[in-house]
Image (cartoon, rainbow, N blue to C red; front, side):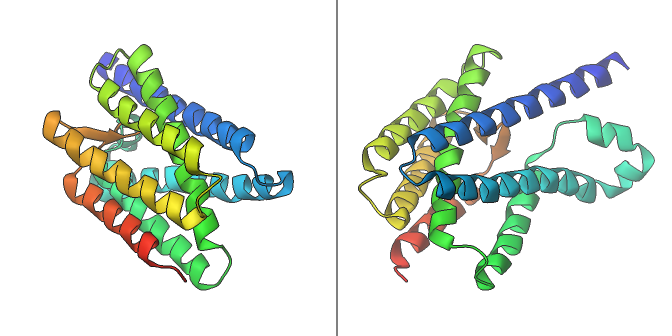
Length: 215
């Protein structure tokens, strides 16, 4: 029982860190972005919906991928931290859902991806910083350094490059940096979720696609 309580506490802490990081990342984007106040509010509403849906989809994935265990002991599934498979489930489900919105012209792809990438970099930096200071995770400083480097590039170039260019460059640099990290440390993570090299390569391919797609 004590073990389950500790795991549940760890899950709550991780979720709290994620929420704090996303809110802080959105705040930084709002302050730094040169868009009009109306545009920034619209962007944040759209992206907030995306991240909320993504978190919900992670939980849906965790339940779906462990359905038999969930039926037997639902508390155990909900208490234990989500695995990488649940993160992948949420990622591909989000691509399907928002790909449909793009197809219906309900969202502007370049602007949406730009805001997602911007908030992701800010939020990831905050999350890893909290993990380093609060959780004393010594592995995170390398990833933190990568994120700091990306933030510098973003700050210098976001107002000079197009949405497409800054988004694709940040995505490709992030992916390349993660591959390097995977060669120098036991694992790589995104918001505490372990990610595989194949997933990182997929992200790089998405960045290349965005760079080459000038339409």
